[in-house]
Image 1: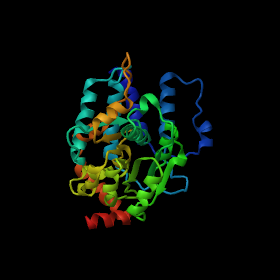
Image 2 (image 1 turned 90 degrees about the vertical axis):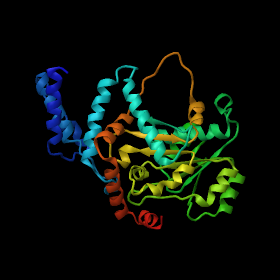
Image 3 (image 1 turned 135 degrees about the vertical axis):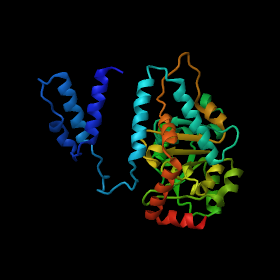
Image 4 (image 1 turned 120 degrees about the vertical axis):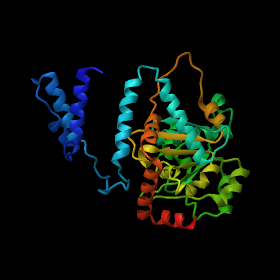
Length: 344
């Protein structure tokens, strides 16, 4: 590493420690305007300090906090991992070790879930993209020839009424159409009512939610398990935020339902507060993940190995203790989750 790069990193680390100031979008033009006569070193310092100073996280559009639990330790480890990834990820080729680290974490988490031989997973750029790929897997599971022939009729997906917008986004991008996303309350609907929906439509997928943030939703589909198997419907669990429990030996039992699902999405930048982004899609039948969208190309495309952030945290942080502490703090603010943990 050159001395110049070391100096720049030192400036960046100092800027991280400076006090943060909230700044509106309209104010950025003024706050991030710099003198034209500055030397390179001076301009670098001014730009970095301003960016860090005015990049404070803001509340959501309703002026409320997002309900997530902050943790500086995991942020620091994932920040360091981000720097390593950027250093080792050159052009279209990434370091083989980064791929190895991802495979190690995927194998470990598959074990936590309870998936057996043949299961697989892949780190993808965001939870929404994970949901999209799971929907493609589900469509391929129901209609194996769709890659080559396409579909000449509408198909539908059933999702929780509190499902993440990624379900609608996936339907939009796949050409299914948002009108073919059927929202239900899994706690209120009866098995007979679910069968009626299935038989009146061409349901290829059910998406349930396992979310433990403030006002989160924990869908349990045990009463529908025979129906799902009978109609060969793909069941996906959106555990983007609730995946915290998998890393806690104390609370992992709450995720026992995961092993019956065909696929699961977990956002580690959400549930463990790692740096954006670190999202994982797990698939019980790994061949579905391979076959549903793979296309042979004469070149190797590039991919950012975000899973290395999770691997580094797993090596240097006690993720069990960390996840347990996070989960207990979530329980305190989530009445539904508290009842779930008490009943299990």
